[in-house]
Image 1 (tube, one colour):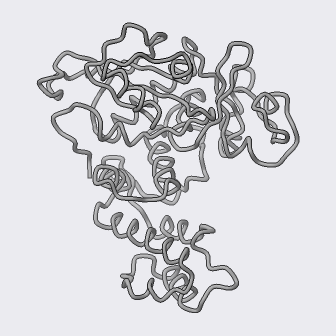
Image 2: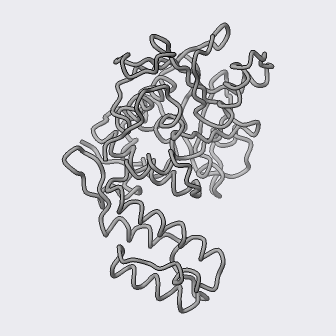
Image 3: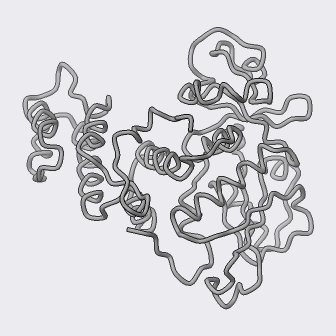
Length: 332
């Protein structure tokens, strides 16, 4: 099988007998090499000492006083986050179990750390996937997207990529920014090249209702739920929100949650809100026995929507905390 998303560091992680990810010394050192944790030239001696000793022994206990002694406030905060994250990895044994615990307990972590977890966990869940559309759709789980409508198609391009400095491409110009790297829409003409360029995040995805991109996103949702909750679900994209009664809903981002709240409370959506909806899905459980009594035989609706600035920031953790199931366990 072709490799992809090398930048997530999946090759530095071991898998246990159940296919879950066990962090290694090398994986922790990858975090230590991040710009947020690499001491700058002006760093104090305590920050340099902490960094160098952890490079030698990334799992060694770190006392709070060691971090408190760092002179720079931003550096202290970064180290508090990474040591807390590392200690949770040690306690929960796998990345999947650690991520599930973090989101269920509502642990405040910078979005970049959660995105990194999602990136590598999805790389594991999609390990043998040979569908580039599904892989590109999975990027929505951990990388914000900027959306635009062009000739009736709803296109999503990587926000960080499209806002970087670089030469203008015709597609990039559609997103209203003056200078961008070259970006193409993923299509049957270039799909074979996805694996070689997967870490460049320079392919846009067509998310128009009724087309394959949105169905591919539904496939990723089903794979995510299976991998983290060990629950088999069917996720079907819907073309219309009208006349949908919501027995239960999960917002796949903050705007999707607000729309679900409004519909739940019987409010009418204005046209601007409706046009902001990127995806609507119906989720059903293959095993009805795991659903709460109130939801027996009922579907769950998933709502994904972009912000007024046309940016989409997906929150895949909502699928772990928001489904109406009897148990909220994951493999550990």
